[in-house]
Image (cartoon, rainbow, N blue to C red; front, side, top):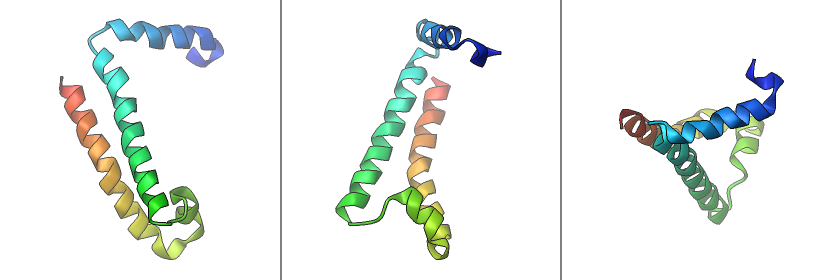
Length: 86
């Protein structure tokens, strides 16, 4: 099991950078962080409460929030699918 020795897991992850999937391994988290930060900053400018807290504490708006989230995650999903095809 990989979790028994965390140093082996990190070596395994770092070792993947030389394989064909290295572009996806590096770019996918960067793109996800970019879109997440952009959405969070937009929410802050609009004076909205933090997304996770609002999702949990306001059940009346949960469906709308999840639809809005898919709009943001859909972009990351689309880019991940393109990177997977490369």
